[in-house]
Image (cartoon, rainbow, N blue to C red; front, side, top):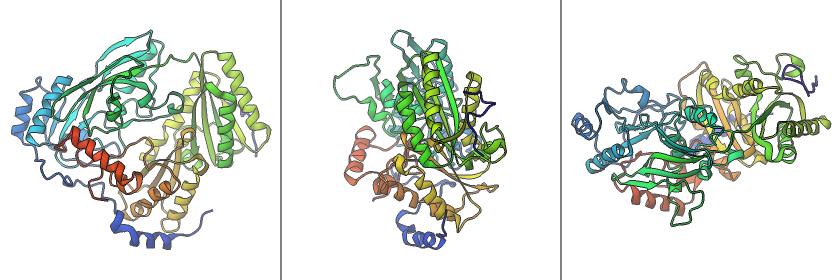
Length: 525
């Protein structure tokens, strides 16, 4: 088994559907037409909410510590008004940075009484427009609530505030021989409150499960100002409804999460990674099956990237595996990581896995195995460069979907065929957490950074409808926000389910002040 510098082994479709796409667009544009996302719009179906004034800002400041209320033009508050992709633009003139749950409660009580919309915000790294205003709602940022209150090294339970940056929590836990069970490319900016509010996934979802599985308790401020103490460091508690799960993934529409109790596993003493090349997606599926068989309890991550995205990433990072060591890349790549407590045992399992994948000659065709943690990180740097590299390439149409693994890449090929004939200027690139069926399907226009309505209409709703036909999900881990909320009732969930969701929203937020116009559909289905 060789180091990254030496290969493990080396070995030296699409039809024209433009007319169909245009016919489809004409037939469906009025039923499903997506909203223009780059321009601000008035809040839909919230006529009872009023615009906040500078008098409101003064009143709110009187309830809070000095400096907690910041006012300015939308441009002056652009960091909070504009999302990470710079696709969604709000017009808020009032930013509030409370320092405690009690201050969040006072803000919400005032805004509920005055019928003023509120947008909860953490690190503002979301990709569906859920964390920025639609119009001029007040932004409530939890960034000043960044205290780690407690860590029990015996139980591995961390208690912290919602504004803690994920990377800071990782560093804190690692110093205590533990880890945070969620890891994202945006960890240097995103905050744990936003992660929980969106039920963020990440590359170790298969290993550690969702945040529903790892969050033990929450503290939440409700729309009317009620402080709901659901904090718990008990791993088992069967008393009453487990209400914390209502707020995990609700995107701030039911309450603002202010404190979290999080279960943190032990830090693995052994980590191995392999960067593998494959010729077909069938080989990817077969490799996944072999990884589950051979690596078992050690398997931590199984990340997928196609040639198109690595050709872009390769301009900034060295791709360690290529055809005959040249510039040509293979069609598909995998990053496989193991984590365990016995280095010799884990390395032996990885070696057995790699030998099995290569013995037939038609599964893994080339690859490298890390020799130290520096090389493990270099492999992850390639994977984590996918998103920022694509952002710098052109306007990005991003789609986060779940799909049965048997059809995982079929949908990418289907969309390429739909788009390519009529728009040869576009580039489709793909990566994702293939082990849990999560595909990040992306379309970009190299060198063009403005949204093109024709491309948007060619993608939506066709992609979502195709995902649903394949019994997948239109949102795997990024949430709904204002990007996909209108499809919740028409495609993602049935009418009865959406009706109950709206009823639940009415229980917790009858005046609709929390993140208005997001998550739930605003139009009738």
